[in-house]
Length: 537
Image 1 (cartoon, rainbow, N blue to C red):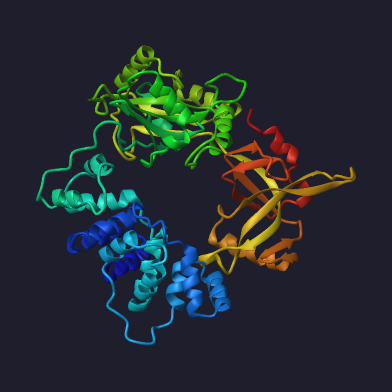
Image 2: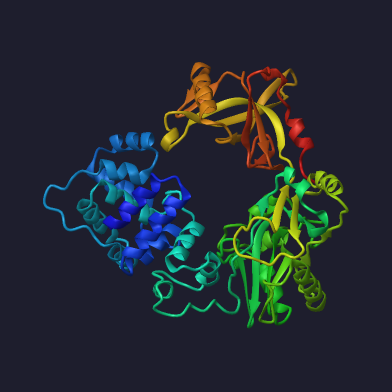
């Protein structure tokens, strides 16, 4: 556990990507099994403990220290694991030896709910502050050490001297503590076989397009297709099994049984599709996409009711064909895969699956004009794909680009502010903003909240905003400050939808502070009607 704690501590204070890679590679090279496998699982988010919850940690700490002191400390520090690790008192007697990482994992998986508090208290007594912090991060999840699953797999590739794509190919068929993987990377066994059948395959991703790059790109070499405003998924069917995967490889079919069951009932399928998960717009045809907010009602659910499936029927808009009848098509050119996809769809006619149409264009100016009309059609933007591009796991630079539509911007008035957490716990960094609308009495106007934002500004701008909030506070409601309606914030968002949960009747998607309008009087900020006109059809 001590070595794992040192690794996490070093990763937190190491901002450079290559340095993080070296730290992880060195750890897995010199740490024995199964500890290194469990550490990899923790870093990639593949390790969880259902019975160890944050509430349990809070209860343990409050049994050892003054509860009010702990709550004040947590509010200031902003991180539960760090607060508990620092405030945990030294044991009265001699503590036992610190546990091994593998022992912690094994005991937590085997322990009953009533056993866990005693185990945690015993381990916390035997560790120093850094070890306690690492232990609590491990069991509560969300390490937040600046490491992605892709970066961990890149470090493993360096350990074995293989390409990261080789790790990606076999990853989703492996389970912690990854003994077979390490045996292969260290030359003690052949490579694990990629998962067969209806299994997940690593997805190919696109880079955001800088419009300045268009001048150096030949439009004849690229194919364009719409970037639909849904959720990127992979549908794998083989041997009578149909599975639906998220972009990260999580199986999500349980939340969309209408789609999966319809395909299963249509007959045997043997193919893997890359596409966009969407829900149909009621009354506009079975495969007419509804706004993302409608799909969001069904995401992250373990089960879904008949009414929701009836009101928000799911379907797949296919982009690509990766496997057909057991044949791997990923090394083929995009143009070849597209032809195969069209032929497959025409032959199989799978229910609730249609094809994302290619967008015909002659030059970049023509495509730019088509993109400008995307918002009116509820489309997120465009994808540009080289016609000769193979389907490669990860985000290679050059073959694919995403060209999203421009954001909506609206001038709003700052209404409320709240302090943030962690590094921002001393700053008022979470902002509620509003727009004008006619008052209920019919006389004059009133401000109504339309959204919240807590990013988009620089550290220097945060300091300015914090000073302004403190100087213009008119009322307080617990941790929230109401401020004088005098500061205009230009807010950017991806889209707006109608909402019954918001007083304004409107919800903003991904709102962020685009600009602080020190120059603009609050009375000249936009009205709610401005957002209503931008509502997607």
